[in-house]
Every structure is written in structure tokens, then in C-alpha cells.
Image (cartoon, rainbow, N blue to C red; front, side, top):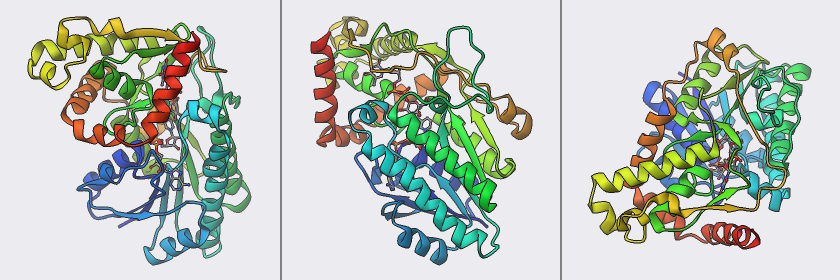
Length: 365
Ligand code: NAD
Ligand code: DAU
């Protein structure tokens, strides 16, 4: 039986991972350490057999206590500031959480595990954004692609990846790192493209497309990501990094057009939606696409990400199971079925920041 400490486990991917792990390994003990920042949400863990400890990964005394009292042998490290737009407006929080926070965890792990000779694993969850941006014909990111982060967010994640690598190389900490592409799915915080646009479409608010909308991302359903992380923890070689992708490279405009058409189809199929969301264009027989609005581009916006995950396929047997079409349909249904979850967030003050930010961009266009 393993005892996991899942940092950031009340966020989007972390909570999906806790759901995946506890369903597939019911004998294991799972402790979540989460600061419950604006992006963390107790409700994401409702009904899951995991203990939530509210606290900061930078609190070394707390992490030490958890490792000792819960007999932690595996850290799965998700906790981070994760939104590129916020990192452009305020990079400090990203250095604090992503760089200093990761280093605090590594220090505790070294002391508690390496210095005592206890078997362990430190799995670090990172991003494809550390590799920078690709031209239209460039080969996809591989694990040996040189790092070239372009935003304060990706630079802070790159720094944390390097620290993890150094703790393996110098101190012999048993680490693995995974770098993945854009996740989507249930519990995705509505500051990110897909959930923001679904909720805006339901409210008749504009869909703010940055620049020309032809930036390309590789969309990875969060359940596939969680399966990939579990495979790395099970079979990944110490000190190695693994890319995890969704095999669904799409320009933003294609994602947005898919989303608009799916919302229109959902309203056509269920007349009850028009009563629940009377401000949606689809409630009035108008296409959702009328909400599309091109706004000022994100500064330093990476043009294209693409993941080569052949190493994870060859070594771990990793294959994404969701196509974008099936994964997106499931996701839209989840947002329509879980209005209470996102209403709870919309009622919080953070969404005021989101709205003000997008309205400013729209006005500047
Ligand atoms: P998220 O923003 O939804 O969740 C982050 C969680 O970390 C929140 O619950 C927050 O409360 C917690 N947290 C932040 N600072 C903390 C601190 N100092 N101490 C304890 N908890 C803290 O993020 P996400 O989208 O679930 O991303 C999880 C991880 O995956 C991040 O490391 C991110 O860089 C990485 N990642 C995300 C994506 C994606 O598409 N979302 C893709 C690649 C990599
Ligand atoms: O690639 C992995 C990364 O994916 C993760 O490391 C990050 O944590 C995660 O947030 C995500 O970063 P992106 O910047 O790619 O995700 P976001 O949803 O913010 O944006 C996706 C694309 O959509 C991007 O090209 C910017 C664009 N966009 C986004 C928003 C929020 C818009 O055009 N309009 C918007 O309002």
C-alpha cells in the first residue's frame, strides 16, 4: 500500500488525479495538500476518499509533519499558479508558488527520504510550455527539445523542472517529471479557454479570441493525463521525463467553432436549456458563433505547441483514449449538468478580475 501526498489536489488536474487514483487503487492512502487559492476548491474533492490538508507547499514544517505522520512515500506535485494571463499581469506569485514552492518540497523530500534511505518517488507535473513555441512545420516537442520558455508562467515551470532534475542528479532523489499539453475536462477553472467560452456562451457574453485565433494547442483530456501520470509513477525510470499529449493538435478557431456548434446542438436537443439560459443566443435561435469577438493578442503569445509522446508510448504503454470530439462532448455535458459548481465560482470575486481583464482587451481592440 502506497501513501501519496498530492499537492494542488483541490485544483483542476489534481482533483481529477485523486479521483482516478482512489478509484483504481482503493488500498492506497491519499493526502491532499492545497492552499485553496482562487483556483483551489474543496468541492472538487467531494465524495473522494482523501484527506484534505489546507496549507502551503512552502511550509516545510507542515510538509515534514505530513510526510512523517502519514508515512508518505510518494509525492505527486501539481500545486502551482497555472494561468499564463495572470503570470503576465503579476509574475511574483508564480515565482513564489512554482519555484520556491517546488524547492521547499524537494528539500523536505531529500531530508526525509534520501537522508534516511527510505524508498520513495517524487513525481513532478509540468507543461509543454517550457519548450517554447513551434513554427507550423517544426517537429513536435520531444523530451530532449531544448527549453525556451516565453512567459513568466512557463519560465517558472522550467525553473522548477530544472530543480527537480538537479535534486535527482546531485542528491539521488528518485524523481520523475511529466510535461503535458493543454488539458480540458470536468472541474476546469473558468478562466481557461474551454470552460470560459462554454460559460460565456450560456450567458450571451462575447467569446474573446486573442489575435487571429490561429494559435495551435494539443488538447489532452484530463482523464488521459491522469492515466499517463499514473503510468509514469508505476513504470517511469528515475530521473526521466515523459511527454504526455492528447494527439489532438487544433487551432483555437477550430476548438471555438466546435464549441459553438455543440452548444447550438445541445439547445436544439433540449428545450429546457433555453429556460435555464435565456441570454444565450442559442435560446433565441441565433448561432452561438455570433458571440465570437477578436481581441488584442496575449503579449508573447506562443503560436504552436505539439507533443511527441512516443517515449511514453514505448516505455509506459501510454495512449490517449479520448478523441477531442468525444472528450469535448463529455466536457460540455459536464458543465451543463454541474451548473452549481461553476455558479459557486462565478459568485466569487475572482471572476470580477476575469471579466475586467477581458473587457479591457475587447475595448482595446
Ligand atoms: P489549477 O490552477 O487548477 O490548480 C492549482 C492548485 O494548486 C490549486 O488547487 C491551488 O489552490 C493549489 N496551489 C497553488 N499554490 C499553492 C501553494 N503554494 N501551496 C499549496 N497549494 C497551492 O491548475 P491545474 O490546471 O490543475 O494544473 C496543475 C498542474 O499541472 C500545474 O503544475 C500546472 O503547471 C500543470 N499543467 C497544467 C496544464 C493544464 O492544461 N491545466 C497543462 C500542463 C501542465
Ligand atoms: O500547454 C499547457 C498549458 O496549457 C498549461 O501549462 C497551462 O497551465 C494551461 O493554462 C494552458 O495554457 P494556455 O495558455 O495554452 O491555456 P488557455 O486556456 O489560457 O489558452 C488556450 C489558448 O486559447 C491560447 O492560445 C490562448 C487562447 N485564449 C485563451 C483565453 C483564456 C483566447 O483566445 N481567449 C481567451 O479568453
